[in-house]
Amino acid sequence: MALLLKNATVYLNKLFQRADILVTADKLFVFDKSANYNEPIESVIDLENKFILPGFADVHVHFREPGFSYKGTIRTGSLAAAKGGYTHVCTMPNLNPPPSTMENLQKQLDIIERDSCINITPYGTITMKQDGQSTLSDMEKLAPYVCAFSDDGRGVQTKALMEDAMKTAKSLGKLIVAHCEDETLLGGSAIHDGKLAKLMGIRGISSESEWRQVERDVELAAKTGCGYHVCHVSTKETVEIIRQAKKSGVDVTCETAPHYLLMCDMDLEDLGRFKMNPPIRDSSDKEALREGICDGTVDMIATDHAPHSEAEKSKGLLKSAFGIVGLETAFPLLYTNLVKNDKIITLEKLIQLMAENPRKRFGIPGGEIRQGAPSQLSVWDLNAVCTIDSNDFADLGKATPFEGWTVSGKLRMTVSNGKTAYVEKGLI
Image 1 (cartoon, helix red, strand yellow):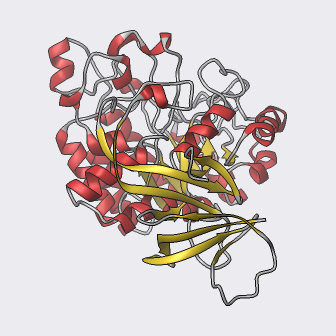
Image 2 (spheres, one colour):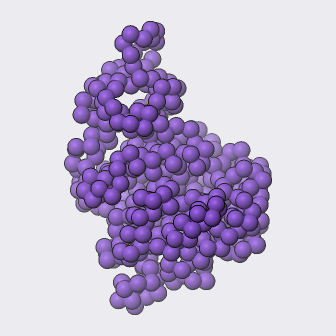
Image 3 (tube, one colour):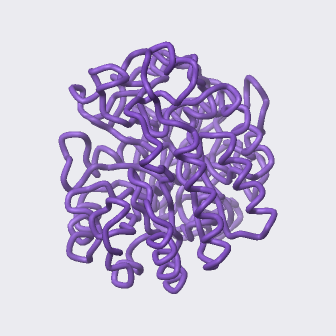
């Protein structure tokens, strides 16, 4: 059986053009009435004035299973991803038990197989305890089943341990993906060491705690030849370090997140939905990140989607848990503010940042709409205007700093592996 999507504007072969797309169980085809197609077409959907884009890929999400299902689950997380137009995500290893052995990882793989409506590839940990300082995980056995190795949530605290990790990952053909945070430079706040932190009389999370480890790690990546990827870049210093490392030929890439591109610390309120790590920083950091996505220093945009319970996010900036959700809002926010309104990047560039570049770096299939490509896509009404309302979210976590923002772009359908992972009521 197949699904025919007619009259849409399609991002086809990296160009926008009018086309009809035939979706089968495993592949996409540009539909030609004269072609001899024998398989029955189950449904025909008219998508006049709609856009068909590749399914997005997010290499940094937290789906909380096993171990923390009261925050969110693989099922609810994958539903949130589908509602945001994502067809592939990579799940971070902040779990209990952490995926540091095959026995532990298998628990997560079994839940993914049972419950996910999209494609998920998990991370393995760098260290056995996922603490940035214990012995290395069982990387060799994990390698065939994971997208990369990361201790996300904890920075690897010693140079020697990171060098050992990079050498091992290099031998296995895997990336080291780093949450860069020097724990000797940390305060206890969700605010960076800037004006707002001083006004509140607290020591925040300094920019230096991020860029010092990035500086160390790019030197180690150059030494070992390991592919190295930096999580959730938030500072102007980090952007410049990565820019210069790339010019020097270091195998380094990085991601940033929508909240760092669209907000600065003057937008913060004393609410848990504004607390994440790294924190939202000042306007000069936001501008540096925007420059970075334009010149290619910042390779991709990830959400760092991290659901928590309502109780954990109801204690203000100082005491709430770190983490916000973002899968269901990322594309409309970025399209509205970076493409439509401010014209900082083109829609084609946004697709590169959200669909093509993540897949290229992490070896994930899909990301393109072309003849014979994997059957993964999203359908958008870019003219539809709506207000972000966390009550509509599919995931258990509801904390977003973008509550009440008006955006253009509404998802109508997500197709993953030939199946409708999400479809707006009444479309079919």
